[in-house]
Length: 116
Length: 109
Image (cartoon, rainbow over all chains, first blue to last red; front, side):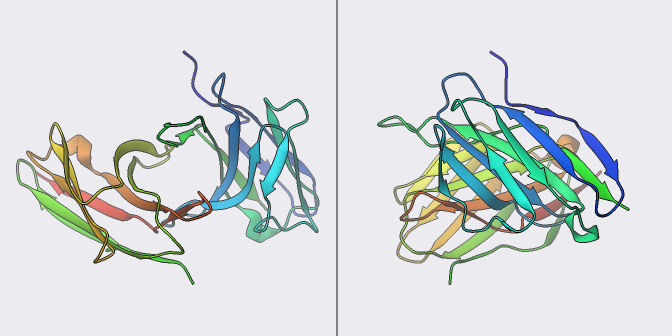
């Protein structure tokens, strides 16, 4: 079974440019998460989806960040315009939220963003 | 506020035992996870505790005391490949995972 797929793996852009990340969760997982992780830190939640509904986007900087999960499967995270401080690894994770499930999150390989 | 504390870095010797501690203060508790993260890679699941006590899985064990807001991850017979960051995370009352900053474990020959 395929794991969480993310693309691109690496992205280098200049500040003020837009950038988009894509994530395809594990088949059947209805919960999808986008995290930001800085070096030496734990992941920080940006947004959590239950199917196509964003149930927690309180940490998403909405002035420049947006996300969508239109059909409740794959998702896109966008930054426009990017700032120097956005350089980080962007992780996507998914989990199954059925009754009795562990809620274990499975992570994709991440996208390492460098803003110059 | 919600807070998870774990040591920033630990060093241990190959073949030895190491215990990584985690203390937490969260809004509610629905379980505690330990994840392993090698440099440049995504976190991978190690263990889950929701009841007090010790959960053993091969060379790794995880302990939880809910009354003390405390957990530890015990790694036995350390191997060089165990060099990684170990992240403690708590599932709060909203089923949101609150993450610690991770403990970087350095294994020396």
